[in-house]
Amino acid sequence: MSANHRVLVDRVACIGAGQCVMHAPDVFDQDLDGVVMIRTTQADGEVWEDVLEAATRCPVQAITLPGA
Image (cartoon, rainbow, N blue to C red; front, side):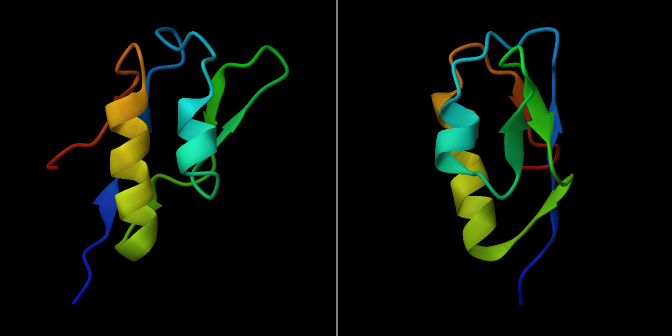
């Protein structure tokens, strides 16, 4: 059984390092200025593992995973 997990980002804190996009491109993208954009606020299964990796690698902790 796989649970859907929420994903939130802080666009103000984002410095455009791109770690989120590199590790979870199904969930994250960047705008023309390099600031994170979220493709979906829900993730599960293998995608959730990618999101956890992206959150860990974000240098400014701009990714929030409520309940994780």
